[in-house]
Image 1 (cartoon, rainbow, N blue to C red):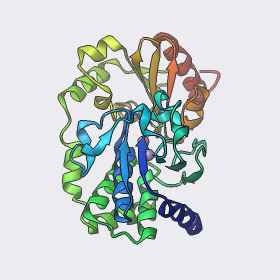
Image 2 (cartoon, helix red, strand yellow):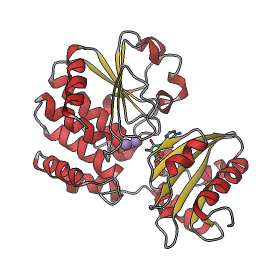
Image 3 (cartoon, rainbow, N blue to C red):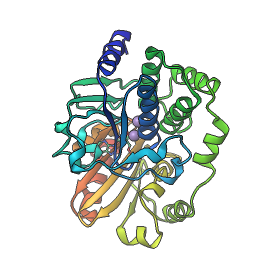
Image 4 (cartoon, rainbow, N blue to C red):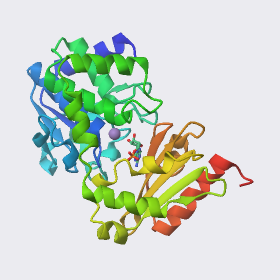
Length: 327
Ligand code: AMP
Ligand code: MN
Ligand code: MN
């Protein structure tokens, strides 16, 4: 990321006022932490900022400062706002419901690290080499001269720890560690953050994990492992989307498995799919076949159609890509 690019982007933000920051649906630590840190930065620069998401913030992140400020935008809210998308490869990642409205905003900004980003805004700051969108917000904060407060450091640390799987995934760079070190020095309480995120697993998530370990399925060479969660099972386990965070990693993190996939029935004809890979397979390319996207090692898509059809089509492609035509 070139300094000049950040400078130009920041200069445009500084010129304007009355912002709304929006993150993607089924929000994760990166989209929430990035939005909050950016809001704190803009407010330190004297700007008015609202925080939007169409979905509620998962309980897991309720410890973050400012998190109660997220609201769901109504039809009349968009006009005149300067709208900043964070951690979204395209507007529909914020929910199909925003599509009729988001163009009513005055200026569109896009801060993201997805390789599949559509560069849809008036001003795009997209850096796929970055492990989290929060790393890009960190650069903006540094460049802005706004002090790295404990609140900002906490929110940014959460973006990094969640999107790198606690510094395990291959998106973790030397610069990721350097930024994390600086955030800790600035007051991010890493012990509390890790406790909140990893040591308060809700019973619903444990119920899903129990189900998962008994129901994983495997390709002929066991390089693809997948789990199907139909609506009935999810209801029985009382599991909502936020309880499924991280489940797909257990499909991937098995001996010999290259690709892990989770298919969950959101509505009768809507299947949400998560893909993870170890190293050989580009799951962004796989997700894009089905209209989704993400990163090479973590991606997703939404499949319109029955669950059985989604499973058959998606797993067939995954096996073809992972094990070849002869499998
Ligand atoms: P998830 O499996 O939901 O944790 O998402 C993994 C990665 O893929 C994240 O970086 C998401 O932003 C991206 N992703 C998930 N679902 C979609 C989708 N429907 N379209 C585009 N990207 C997605
Ligand atoms: Mn995200
Ligand atoms: Mn992210």
